[in-house]
Length: 340
Image (cartoon, rainbow, N blue to C red; front, side, top):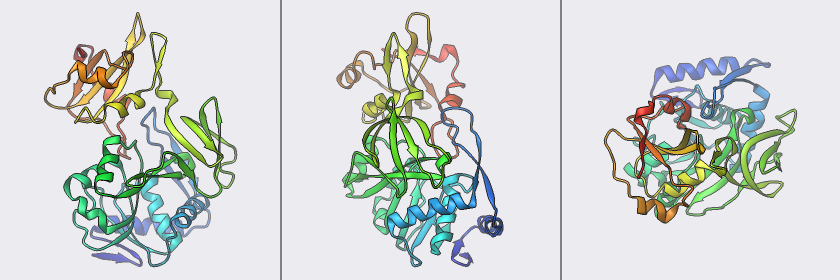
């Protein structure tokens, strides 16, 4: 294991990246250019300052009460805001950080206890499938970058593990709210210190004066509980209007999570009669069996997709989200087939 102060790694190139980051960080007026996820549209380049990153890191460290003896594992891409913020949290908190290349099961080779781990849902799912006992080695886990399915939450409950699901975006310099999922689940997200919420026509508006010069209106549809708690419903920019009926793909996806055992998502294509026709996109190299009665048991008649298509491999963003637009661009007109 190679080391650089409190930073360690088994990969010399990763440690060199850390060294370069520390050199830039040493400059008082340092700024960093990071990409938004690009999961709903064109990825944007966003400039964030050293001071903004410090404030964000302090919020997380304070929330979890991390100290100089904390030991964390970084297993996310260092090109993302999530990866960079793990470095900054360790720097600000002056604690130990093991830096490793992203992998589907970052705990596979871990044998010693860890205080803090940040992962994406795909990594959590793999850990639960391959080595769920390794979760006992980790005190605090945050998961973000993509929605967490109901199936994954049930798996966490089965192994009696609680993790924190994050809410945030590149514009807010990592997460600004957290909620427990798994064994001790809570419905609402809780704001980090200094963050408050309002809503405009159901869309969440973030007030974060320490980081944002003005309130940030999101495209997230929420149920506002109070100024520091909200229940997330779905993305309003994903809403599909089919024959005058507004449908939320993410709501439908949650209902189907236990029925479909391959990665999938709900989308739509243009239709002369309906305006938009609901579709189901599945990641599979071979056909899978789907029964109409199973869909009718859990979905309304409007929520049942009209067409489906198979894709051998989904396109993903750097943070592990399904890149819906890039994936759909691979589907030809003739690939769409009637679902039932």
